[in-house]
Length: 351
Ligand SMILES: *Cc1c(COP(=O)(O)O)cnc(C)c1O
Image 1 (cartoon, rainbow, N blue to C red):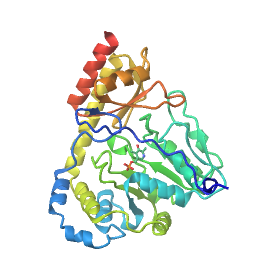
Image 2 (image 1 turned 45 degrees about the horizontal axis):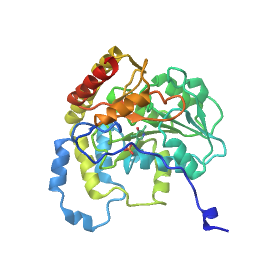
Image 3 (image 1 turned 90 degrees about the vertical axis):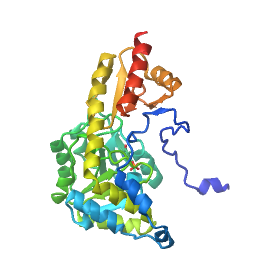
Image 4 (image 1 turned 180 degrees about the horizontal axis):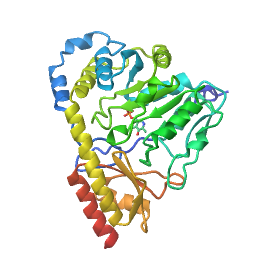
């Protein structure tokens, strides 16, 4: 017998490319094109490295307190982790322990099925409709838990809050996770529903709207009881996750609400302008409420456009997967970066 028969084998999640060259216009991983708040630079400069001698605060109190103030929630309704990937992975491990399948859309964040497979959680996907909308009715069924990204990725489409509430209310005997990675770009958060539903967990990230993908901070919001279960699993796995510098940086970013609003509004304005320009070039897409647009072209194939852009050092994301293999996911860069992409596309598509 080979040792290979006894090990856990999984097919890993594939992140977007991170090219080394800084000549690249990088529109492939939904990072912010703007730097983090100047308060972040200050927090790093002022950080006393003697703090690294000791183990970190397992409760990340400074960061959690700042989140509590920002979201007007008590501290015990907040959980933090190393990016929302960590928070979501721990949530799958904690909340999905049923023999019944967990349900999520067929087209969504491609880490969900990876975590389910890793933990041996049974799951079923529910097809989006032809316009890439989530069909509420599909989630009103017997299941082992529900996961919905809102706005969804990579489609960018937002669900109606009333429909999300219907799903949370129907599934009151199991946990519903709403992944709000992109909610700060003009969508509505379901955080206010926490008060009403003890089965709801809302997950957010600092990676996109707070321009901090590199520092790795994510958060979950829910009632004390459900957050308590999440903490129990976290403390059974790795107590010391967020390091003190990360905690200081995250808290500093939250203190600069004005800057946060400025960069998210800029991205929204860029997105709305790029939508118009892409439409004129023959692209169509769902109405994105995120920092990206998921688009197909009326005549050119997505893979051809993807390769042509890459030759120009413009990286966008292309998923070779059923139903979406003729779409490109284009992250919003600065206005100048988007203009460079648009001007190339004009020549390429009309020439
Ligand atoms: C980016 C993203 C995440 C994870 O982001 P982190 O950098 O790990 O916080 C989670 N869910 C969705 C839908 C995302 O797009």
